[in-house]
Length: 194
Image 1 (cartoon, one colour):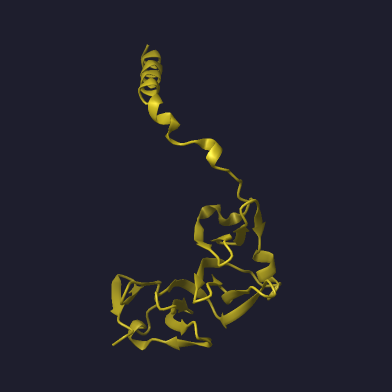
Image 2 (cartoon, rainbow, N blue to C red):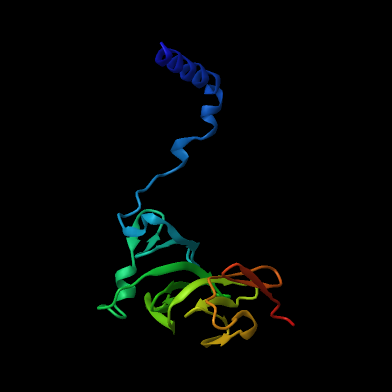
């Protein structure tokens, strides 16, 4: 009896909300299946690159979506050190020309659009990173906060005030004027202009 009442309630509600069913016109959308990878535990980053493709990164995968298909790219990155275990973090675009950068346990990886190959900008274990409006990339590398500017990709700048010793920085993010870093239960603020 209870089962029949529940079924009647569902049918009544579906008739009640039927006028709203046309709000989403499914022919206007296309659905694609993401390739089967181990990143289903969570997507670490999603970004759109300078030529309009969508990039996804996960624990052991980097994929690009060109509007029609998904293509896995982690093997191309792993060719830099093919016998090592790789893990990927965030994927973002940075700088005036929207360079694609990927954090990994082997370094900050950048896509070279001319050769369509990947290069390592900085070695090390790259944790969370964020891009400021000025184009600076603030990253956690080997547990410490560093910053590099789009104009000078050759070296990261260590930021002492955001790196208490011997603690490990677990996250970093940028706002309009400040950079924040978290260490255990402490949130630290840094103003790069001061």
